[in-house]
Image (cartoon, rainbow, N blue to C red; front, top):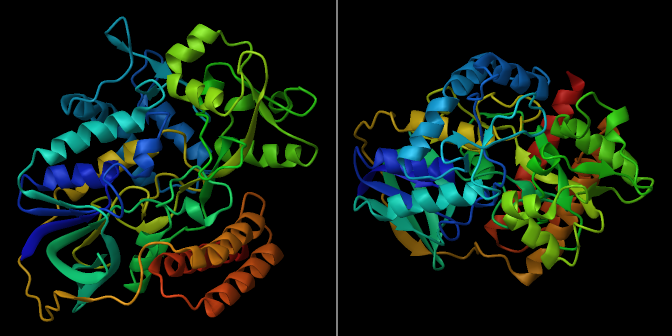
Length: 474
């Protein structure tokens, strides 16, 4: 069977693309784990849109450019930001409920890099609300075939065109064919020792695109979120930037606010700036988030999930400061696309975090990611579905490689994460990146197990460091 469209990934970008494309034909939706296992599910903040009384599209554009250090693609910035207000209405029509004031006006949070309160949200679980709403819609569509626990091994390329995907399922390789294939596999935060990303964010989409020789761009622009709960867990629980927008302070070991002396926006400076300053403060001691001056009732009402996370980890936000650390959070680079979602390979599209549109530049403005995922998956929905002829139809065969992590893989992965954190983390240098590259290449050479996930992680890490080195030499 040849599907009209194959979608790889089940975050906002993948689900929305599948929903839209299902109106035009038969869709196959493949996901590595369960439908809800995506970065979207963990997105606390919301979606940025200039709808406030003193806000404007131009202000939102300007804040996006400033946060991205003007490394953004201007056409992408204007294209996506201008469509933000209508994106909110699209989600409302799909049944997504956002937090409102007096049941009419949207409650608007302010986050880092924003000079206005413009983040529309569902309390502090916006991504979960969107994901649940879209999954419900997806499951009601008869012409969407959902396959969970299916690992996309490689794209099938014939005559320079992508005609499908080779997938590992239950220790067998299966080839599925489609008129178009959409990569929506998310990011690669799990390459780093400290991350807010779920365990599935291992860079598989980048690796399979690289093996297919798709154009990649700016992989070195990795964003670190300034405030993850600093505990011995992986992934680290995220403490949304909206907490600082609501008045939370960053304090050093002495209990002093340090951001007020470092940046005019203080705790709400762009994420890369705040993360770098925190790393330097951490050399002197623990950095924490001070919520004690925020009323308990307001904290529980506006940030219920986060309040539970803090309490569950044996901290009391009413009486003590909460230890935080920066952590790998979002990849701004990825598989290069135009504003139709087209990649350099015919019939292959990409959207969401795996894709590079140029919106984010060197550093993503808070809450622009769900916006980009929605707008660009809307673009993919319009992709032409021309008939294809498949030459090689090896549909199913036994598989000798694994797609589930084994205990024997863990030492390699832990070494990789430590190397990336030390040499390709928040503070970088040419010599450090070069040392990191050599260490990872040695890991790659010595890795003898047959497992696609570590192989993809090692390949993606090498690509990220090589991209960083090229950037330093510009």
